[in-house]
Amino acid sequence: MLADLTTKTRPSFTREEILEKYADGARDFSRASLCKADLSGADLRGAYLSGAGLSKADLRNANLTGADLRGASLSGANLSGANLTKANLTGAHLNWADLSAANLTDANLSKADVSGANFSRANLTGAKLNQSYLIGTTLSKAKLNNANLSNASLSKSDLSGADLSNANLSGAKLKQANLTAANLTEANLTGATLKQANLNNSHLLRANLSGADLCEISFIGANLSKANLSNTDLSKTCLKTANLSGINLSGANLSGVDLSGKLLTDSNFSGADLSLANLSGAYLIQANLSNAKLIAANLTNAQLISANLYGADLSNANLSKANTMNADRRNLILKGAILPNGKTYTG
Image (cartoon, rainbow, N blue to C red; front, side, top):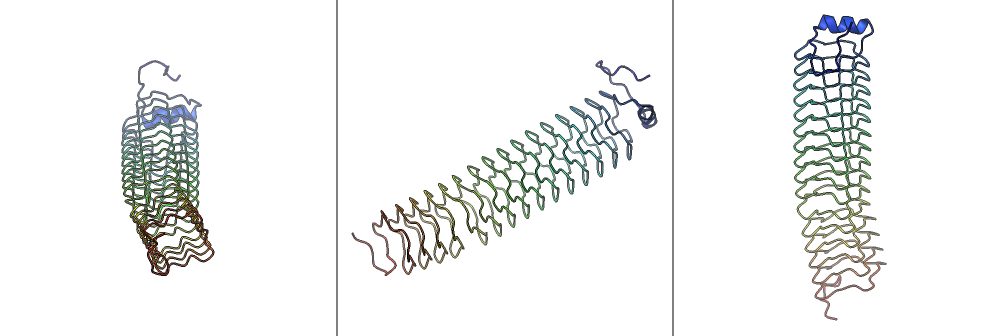
């Protein structure tokens, strides 16, 4: 008969004992002491292991589908290749654990501590990681599509090549995170902290980064087409070779940013601060620059065909040889600006 595991004691089992009890129909192994146990390849589907001590246990290729591991200690455990589909790991301790190539589809890891863990090539599709600690965690090439990472701590984590399409990262802390070549298509990053993060060659098509902290980020080669970056600070951001077509930058701070030669057709810059920005040769066809601040901006040879410049402040801006055909130029502020014909506005 399985010992009463509801007390504060921690029953200890050998591999043979726990597998024999499981085969006999026992499922409740909560608070069991299984530190350093060899449970590789074990079938423990639906087992109750909440509060269990599994630190440094060998669970490689184990089947833990639907297992209850709430509050369990799995620090330093080896779960590579394990099946944790729909497992409940709420509040579990998985720091420095190896979960490479593990299947965590629809698993619940909310409020879990997985700092320093290895999730490379793991499948976390639809997993719940909200409010979890993933500081310094390796998630390279992991599948996190449709995962919930809201308010998660991911500072200095490695998400290079990860699939985060449609993932919820609202309010997440991603300072100095590595997101190179990550797929963030239609991801929700509203209010997220991405200071000094690396998003080179990442895919952010239709992603929502409204109100996110994007200070000192690198977007070199990134695809930001139709992404929402409204009310963000991009003043110290590198956007070299990034795709910005159709992007929403309304209310954003882009002062001093180099956007020369950029394809910005149909982009939204309404109310944005583009003071001292370099927009020389930029394609701003049908772009919305209404009420934008373009003080001392460089717009030489810019294509502003059919652009909305209503109420824009172009004081001391350089519009030499710019094409403003069919542009809405009502209520422009042009004090000291160099006009397309090369003359300085004096009116």
